[in-house]
Amino acid sequence: MSFEQELEQKIKSNVKMNEPMSLHTSWQVGGPADYFVCPDNISEIVEIVRLSAKYNIPLYIIGNGSNLLVLDGGIRGLVINIGQSFCYINRIEKGLIAGAGTAMTMLAKTAVEYGLTGIEFAVGIPGSLGGAVIMNAGAFGGYIGEQVKSVKVIAPDGEVKILSNDELVFGYRTSSLVGKGIVIEIELELAIGDKEQSRSQMEHFLSERRRRHPSLPSCGSVFRNLPGNPAGQLIENAGGKGLRIGGAEVSTQHANFIVNTGTATAADILATIDSVKKLVKEKYNIELRPEVKIIGEED
Ligand SMILES: Cc1cc2nc3c(=O)[nH]c(=O)nc-3n(C[C@H](O)[C@H](O)[C@H](O)COP(=O)(O)OP(=O)(O)OC[C@H]3O[C@@H](n4cnc5c(N)ncnc54)[C@H](O)[C@@H]3O)c2cc1C
Image 1 (cartoon, rainbow, N blue to C red):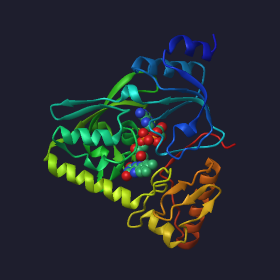
Image 2 (tube, helix red, strand yellow; image 1 turned 90 degrees about the vertical axis):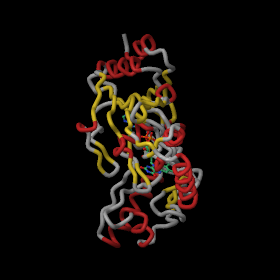
Image 3 (cartoon, rainbow, N blue to C red; image 1 turned 45 degrees about the vertical axis):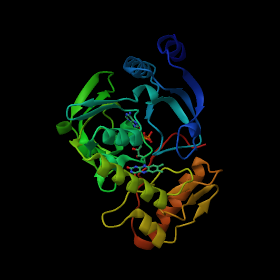
Image 4 (tube, rainbow, N blue to C red; image 1 turned 180 degrees about the vertical axis):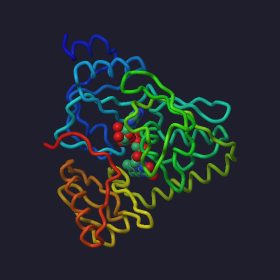
């Protein structure tokens, strides 16, 4: 039996072939993935992990694709999108248990409605909770790793494991979960808060986002900040604002954002990333490092 036949036989969810990744990334660019599936449940994920190992098919995991640059040649392998079926939030004694597909904004708002505090900062982050714990997403001084009590993953060998907080390390936009498997569920420990105060804090965060961030498709901040040196400031001072290659442009509003003005390809964005790095290197002798994950093949 072939990989495709086994997939068809064992996976009930729709497996798409040659699926344009531009439909699944916030930059709206990226070539086709050979196989793309949004699994319904844990057993399907375990089966996919097993089959891809058996047939040597590379596996990629995505959430909302809001921190991903998929190159124009697309992805040779299978993309698992942790989405709708893993979108749930349950109140527990000391916080919440939520599925990895839960949107960060929904999570923040639901926590507040339960009278919990600690993740107001997450409102407006366009990622999923799974992507957020992998990236240790944060904003306005908070980051998700601070609230994580445990994480349920499907390990690369197909075993379901629960990793507790003391086994995990969260750093600046990184976590020790990278390479540990597919995140499916997260337990968050949250304190009791004041609903009204949390609501007005979230309003403030959302209005700051509207004020600071461009509205065109982007991936948020492209480069990692350096201690004491926000990447956007370095890029702006090096004259990078407005730099344009094809349909990609360094935002004139926020220099650490590269926006898709409508016709950008991943190659345009990649070339813009390289030009910005060069500019900052020439002016300050500083190497900027991308925060976004770059995957796939060039055309
Ligand atoms: C307008 C805008 C504003 C943003 N603002 C912020 C901000 O304030 N703070 C911030 O930190 N980020 C911000 N981001 C970036 C992005 O939203 C975050 O990094 C987010 O956490 C990524 O989540 P995602 O679900 O989109 O992950 P994806 O982009 O889909 O994936 C990111 C990485 O996580 C891995 N991954 C995703 N889900 C899983 C899973 N379930 N199991 C294992 N691995 C997984 C992927 O393989 C990939 O390596 C912003 C982006 C945009 C477009």
